[in-house]
Image (cartoon, rainbow, N blue to C red; front, side, top):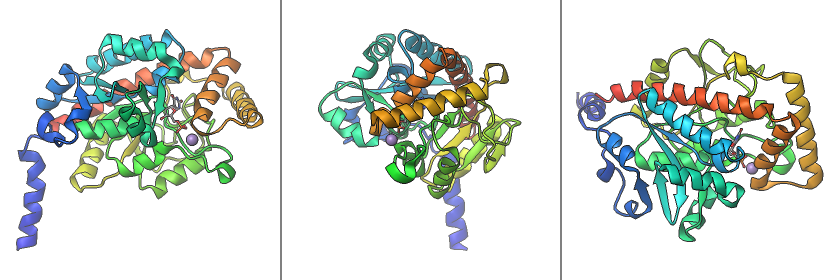
Length: 336
Ligand code: PSU
Ligand code: MN
C-alpha cells in the first residue's frame, strides 16, 4: 500500500542521508550570518556530537574572572565526554557558533556591557554589529541553524513570580515551544514561579524530563522542587532516544532535560528561599522589570547568600555539560 511505503521511505531518509552538512545545512541567505569555528564545522561535517553552550551565563550570570574560567572548564568537560563544545555569541554582525579563547575572554570582560540577546534582540544586535551574549532562546535559535540538537546551560528562564500582573514570561519558554533543541539544565531557579513555569511548558508542548533517579522537577540550587516532572528518564541513551523520536516525527518543539544539582553541592533551602524572597521584594520596590529582572535577581541572590550560590551554580553547570555531552554522543550514534 502506497501510504505505507511512503511512510517507510520517510523513515529511512534520516538513516541513509548524512544528517550534518555544514554548507547544505543552512541556505545561502543564512551563510553570511553564521560563523562556525573550525572544530565545530569539522564535527558537524563528520556527524560527530556537538553541544551548544550559551553566553549570557558568562556575561550576565557570573562575575569576572570566574565566568571565563567556568566557560573554559565547561568546554573541557564537554570535550572530555566525547562531544565538541560550541559556545554561541553574536560578534561583529555574525552568529558565532564555537568561540576561541580570546572571544570567551571578551565576553567575560564585557559583562553587562554585552547585550543580553534573546529572540527579539537578534536582528537588532546583528544589524548594528553589537556584542551579543545569547540567552537560552538566542542560543537555541543559533544551535538549530547550525544543526546542533543538544544544548547545556545552568537554568532556563521561566514564568516570573507575579506574572499574573506583569506578564513577565521568559522568551525561553516560547522558544522551547518552537525550536527543536534539547536544553539540559538544572531546572529553573525559584526566583521564578515554578508551578506556572511547568504549566506554560505544557501549553507550549514541551516535554520536561527529570533526569536520573529523581522524579521531581529540580529547582536549580535544590535537587527537588516538590513538583513532579511529567517524564522521568534514567540514562543519556533514553533521553537521546526521546530526542530522536521527536525529530523523526517532525515535532518542531524543544525538550527540557532537567538534571538535579549533585547532592553534595545542594544548598540549604531555607537560607536560599529567604534570599530569593528578599531579592524579589527589592526588585519590586526598585521597579526593575523586563530583561533587567533576571540578572538583577541572580546578582542579589549571590550577594545575599555570601557568594556560596556561585560555587553551587558552577558545580551544576559542569554537571549539566557532562550529561549533555553523553546525550549528544548517544544521539549521534542513532544517525546511522
Ligand atoms: N537563570 C540562571 N542563570 C542565567 C539565566 C537564567 O540561573 O544566567 C539567563 C539565561 O541566559 C536565560 C536568561 O536564558 O537568563 C533568561 O532571562 P529572562 O528571564 O529575561 O528571559
Ligand atoms: Mn522577562
